[in-house]
Amino acid sequence: MRRCRATRLRCRCQSAREDATPLLLLHTYPGSFTEFLDLVPLLTDNFHLVIPSMPGMAFSTPVVDSGWTMDRVARVYDALMRRLGYDSYGSHGSDGGAMIGRELAVLDPDGFLGAHVLQLFSFPSGDPTEFEAFGPKEYAALEFAGWFQSVGATTR
Image (tube, rainbow, N blue to C red; front, side, top):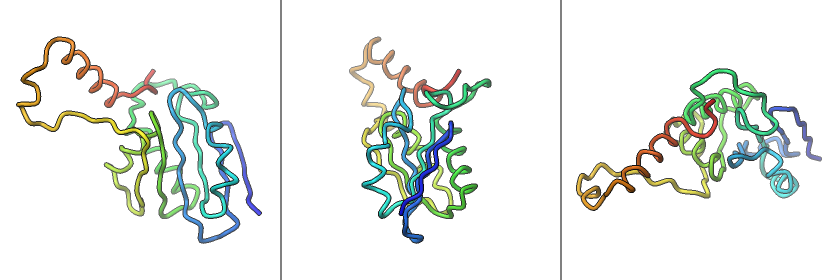
């Protein structure tokens, strides 16, 4: 029998299997943990699920300070998983959740098993020739992508 507990900030569903893999499910922007509720019965045979609300979104409490970058959210989610007693875990996300999953993969905390993302955000490789054909429109798009990656959608 699976046990699920929902709070304003997250939904946690434990598998009946004690050795199930902990999995952090990361919702889209602007979304909520409710996006994953239909998957709970399908996943809890093999996974302990933690489905947090992204800070400042939907069922989450409002953010009152600035600086809520995707990196900061990733660090908060890692701390959450540790507080819940998980020494290792993986993540899955799309859209904003994919960006947080990427930051978790870059952070690579002890015991992090990996990130599965449904959306790939591509940024320049550093090769100067890839900018040769850029005009003002492309530079504006690149500047926006850089801003979105650095501060994301959760900054207030």
